[in-house]
Amino acid sequence: MVSKESRSKVRVKKHNRLRNRFAGTAERPRLAVFRSNNHMYAQIIDDTVGNTLVSASTLEKDAKAELEKTNDVAAAAYVGKVIAEKAKAKGITTVVFDRGGFIYQGKVKALAEAAREAGLEF
Image 1 (tube, rainbow, N blue to C red):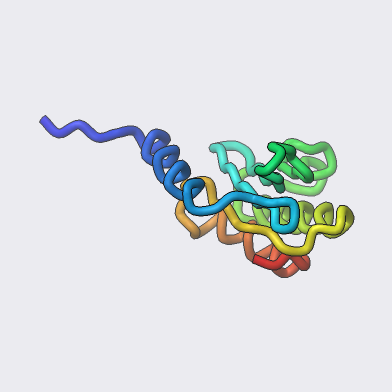
Image 2: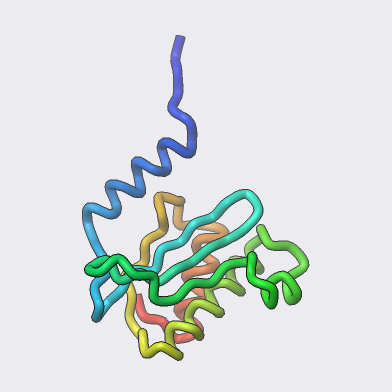
């Protein structure tokens, strides 16, 4: 009988492999993305000290007020725009994109493209 690992375990293994390749620094922090079944989360992290510099998600009040659904591509694009605006306000212009082991399509791609359009470079 063939047994398969769960999708969440596979994603965590992929994320660990990705994290071995790059880390966020003070000059170029890491934009980490997490997607659950109901929400999208993004944070900009300085890995040298382990601090979250900026965060945005669909759980925030203004996001819930503006969005019809919190788990679609439009919601992901909104989070990307918000995280880029917050980062620019803190003086962060370039980041390293960490897709969190998720495939770069759909919601993750929408978040990344919206962040790029709003002024983040990666």
